[in-house]
Image (cartoon, rainbow, N blue to C red; front, side):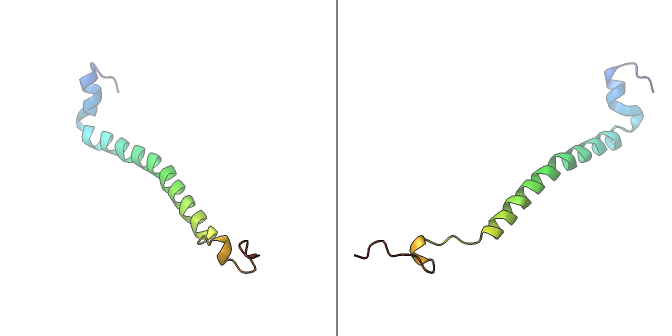
Length: 67
């Protein structure tokens, strides 16, 4: 397809809403997927680490204050 001007290009022969809407949806998915994966990875790593306990609360920990 050959366009005479930039406005013809952006109008896409009357299908601009479909064409540009599709491009926006694909771009959003391509940007959102890595973000979702990073957030999911961070959440899983936090679950695997579990809650942090102070050293004094751990089983078998030495009492450093005892004489």
